[in-house]
Image (cartoon, rainbow, N blue to C red):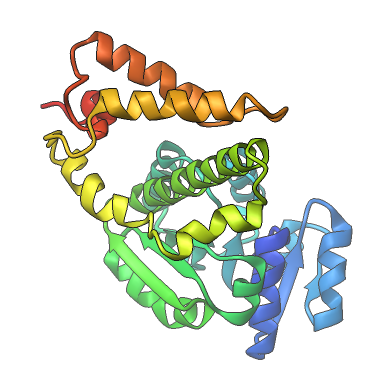
Length: 284
């Protein structure tokens, strides 16, 4: 018996390398065949089609680009796969698409688990990082012994089928927002004649992640009692934008925040906490 892995991009290739380190037999397929064949160097078997890869597999893993790619693969392997063979999808996919797949496969009795990850390619090789999962508890528990060696932190969130997909988007929202914020800091630093490396030393002392724990918790509750008034935050955005304008690089995040701040101030929220940014999301 072997494991089939469909999709050998950065994440898939890393996971396959990790599987091979653990001595597992793996057949791989990728739309770009060269990426699958590259894994022959670690002992994986490259296949010409998904059907060839999954035939006789004990378990199927998928890590591709989007919902359409997952659905196309599932449709293509349908006749070649035993209905009781479990399928684990690591793709960052939409919550709606994931829920629809659970419904379709569940009607046929196919064990399916959506398990997206917060793992770098190296973490995949080294079985580090976080793997999320949601869906039927029985399916998760049956797959848990196989999944746990793949990651440093396997977290089953619950039975609601789209939870893991949703949480993956929450995490990516934070990654992208922080990345945009860092880009703005580097832009501001450049304009002020300060190296990016020196600017970022601030965060060795000021732990910005505490904003999530403290302000974020209040925002989720709809508590906008001020500790940093919106009007003061808008003034600071003005100062940042004025200072950044001395350089040539554009800001990424701050102009959008300035626009949103102005809208909320016009609606009468100026004396509330800057967390009032979430007012339309959490209002009862």
